[in-house]
Image (cartoon, rainbow, N blue to C red; front, side, top):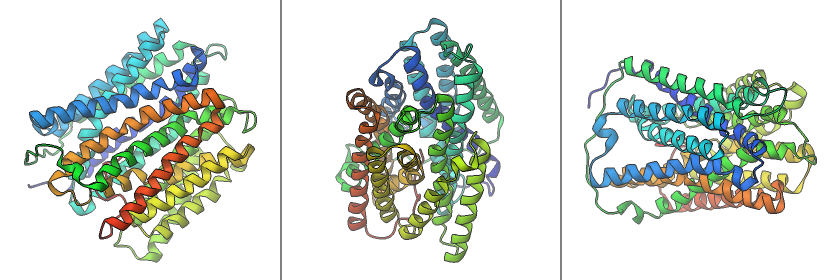
Length: 466
């Protein structure tokens, strides 16, 4: 398969796409407390937002899997570019539905909008991630994927600040929340998706096709690392989404910080910003062309630059944010201890998150607050590591295994919902026990892979991103 020598412009175009869907995905965390207060919802009912949004990932992936199994691979049939355009149009439709939902003040219509938006993002995930891996050599695919994932995290970092300002302040009527505060922002998002679709339609993106190999049955499930990895993705996405969904409510508790939603959104940006820092660091950590000294220097430099970037974005003083530096240093140390081995790094990061969650559950004030906020740093490479380890050695079953792993994003729909039920019964702080259990499983999965999978798998290699 011949490919043009340089795909930088195409990669830049797709990077903007990853940024956009990261931004809007994180807007869910902003809207959950907004809708909870607006419609006087319990935590369980508020978490239906994530249930519908991430449930759409599962629904869309199952439909895609069935079509590709019995007919043909849809994206391979219509092309990656057309697949991306389809995903953008569906996403724009989901955003447009927020207008009638707000106008009629119907929570059910809001949930329908989240579901359709999630379907659009599912198509984008299926089409855009492998397309990025094709824009260059296989040897550098992991670097490209980590790069676009990092910009995806940049979108999730600034969304709480910018989106929170519009929802909680700019469009709030006389300081009070109203359904109308979602009208204009999501109309703007719909317009941006359509503009991006037009830009991609006009752009001269390279065309790729793959040789289809029919594989009947579910042969991929004969590999134990895949079966365990499906649950690994389920628990990782579920834990990450659940923590982000409850972050504003957690920080608003008097025993933690007593912050208003307008202030808490800035701290939420640190949670997602931590994932961005970790992903940029992971892109350097897996570069075996660098010496250990150069790698250390670049990673420290990147950590400093991105911390300053986050500091410039959030509406917090240096004194308020300085504690985060301690956890960035811990993240750097954990990377060096992991030595870029996917399984080892996964175990270390998961166990650190278990300790951080125990700290958040059994403490109050700033100790609990910073423990929970810093989890994002150690979530950073979990998706790529779990995905890579799960499909290692699958051979001709790799595509089938990948589709099964994407279905496991269902964890983002179910875990927050279950945690919502626990929070209604025992409080938000106690409900953090659930993601703690999720990270314990991830640590077990990493340990299993370190013993069962031969050879060293580089951090992020072969991942499709989240």
